[in-house]
Picture 1 (cartoon, rainbow, N blue to C red):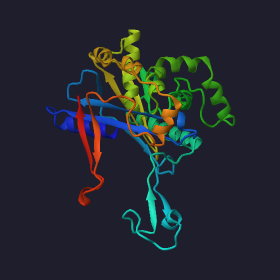
Picture 2: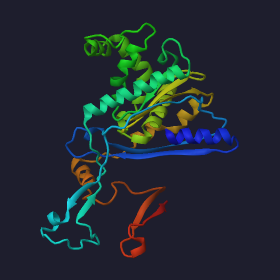
Picture 3: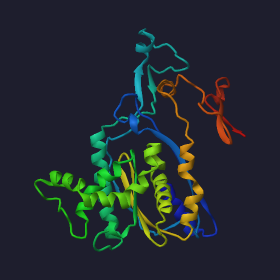
Picture 4: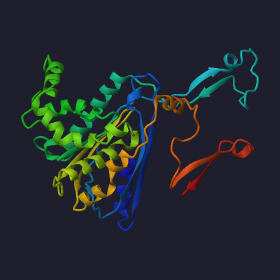
Length: 329
């Protein structure tokens, strides 16, 4: 989202130019961890121009950020003597240091704490955006659809119940009730909130439930999903607003909104999003486990019309680790 923000600023200053935002990521968790079922990978690209045909963005952006120890990927260290089982600090694969740093793709996290900071940041950014735009009444009522960062498909609907309650046209809660959490749970299970979810949140969840977590690409895949689902329903969204609640662990939320343009429905149909997802290749658990543990080093699908990693330099001293790619027809 920050890249999108930067590109929009660039195009605003250079209206004859265009910019491309590419969000590509992989969400990998330890086997048998609580985050394993949310894993996902993918990429989404957006073309930004001064004359958009899908969605336009106003120059209103609200941010809430706080440095917390949540969901990060620290370097782990191992003493070389424990690896080699000797006291002396002998060279080991070119490493002269007494401790070896190890990087893992899998993050350190606490699921409940992650939910808490996610809710805190999105709530703060939401209210800041409401104040920034001078919105009176319910902000979310002005949005035809809502796209949230989705580390798993139903994260948004579970977290948005609080904003649904606090920012209703007639607020359902003030936040000061002694039984606040109990009443919030009751509201989240009520028919009114379920209807709200089905109308405004579910369209953006559809693709996430099939793909998993895309980290940086989540909010953009949510947008594409919402557009395709609404296009298939025949919903007329031209001129309507979509609200975005982006989030990144650490923790930071950015809230903004966009207005759909006349070409959104054609672009949604042309994406063939769900038709492409149906063509995914199913693998068995043994293959999944081997891929996860990097015991299998070849793809389950033959490469076609894409860039692939060809080789990694292991011999030339000045190029150790250099990665070489090639295009496969």
